[in-house]
Length: 113
Length: 116
Image (tube, rainbow over all chains, first blue to last red; front, top):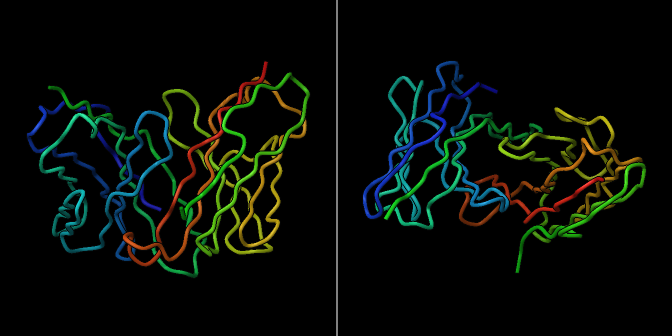
């Protein structure tokens, strides 16, 4: 699975959009980009994932560059409850593989009033 | 509620004692995983079970054993606990999960283990 690079920490004002970057320059064609977050030592929570196209769900949007070497997670209107560690993970999808998720250090997002 | 249930939530052990961490999921998922998380660190994979009847080592398996008892249950055993095993342990399962796309991951709430 490709390695990812994320900033250690970021701040965001409450109500503003939070844009969390992730570099994955060695990503291969069949690897998906996943985002998870962990709020204060709870179990990680799934946010969104994608392969090539931009994706949006009720929690966030995922923007993947055309060369797929980087992506951005967007929380459109950050709230204090979005303060968490955000993990960007790339891995091969499919029922035939082992499905291991390998976590890096993640980005600590602090949403401030 | 559907999900991953871990027991116990908290445990204090003396060095050398043994214990088993329990994990059960009710989503009919095939794959299950055990992770540990040390303070200020990301999660590290200890063992995983890609399907019922199979188990494999992850990044940090030393000092642990696992049992995939059936499709629902995946336990983690510490035979002789050491202070270095003080950590938060998370169990996860992977499979068809509503709202997550084809193969999603669901994590339990964790077991906080202290070895003194």
